[in-house]
Length: 179
Image 1 (tube, rainbow, N blue to C red):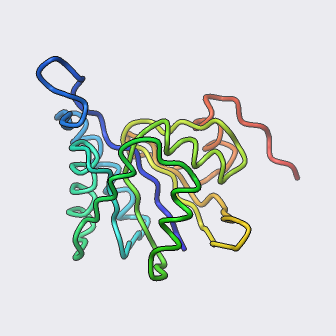
Image 2 (image 1 turned 120 degrees about the horizontal axis):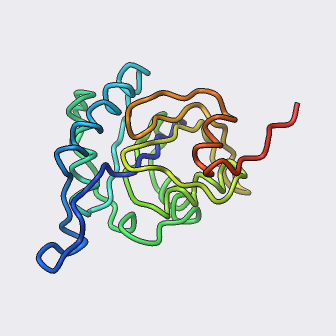
């Protein structure tokens, strides 16, 4: 299965009039994420399922992606994606699905970065706003095996080199790949 893990795009700041759950995308966030969505479309992604956190900024990000991809299904809201979503939750969710070949998850930091870090044996990772990582995954009884395919920056740049991607995801702390 291909798993696309995407952090929501740039949103307005939380304030006394805008609680965290209702933070919405800024104009800049929408514009930049449309570039990300276009890049993903050019990569040929064709998800059977798009799953989002219920928070407004994540749902709006998922909607932009669905519109760009001309996704014909309904967005799925997974409440647990809103906070403290970890690898065991992902595994449990994937096991609950009928098998899919391609899935998009839209959520938040630090949760998504922690999951990517665990799956790629590079902790900790941070996905920048509007960015995403694509992995090839396989569920196994002992856990999840995964391999890096590519990442897309929050500005829409595609990075296919594993070392370069890990340097970005870890803030330059990536260990060099072994030959």
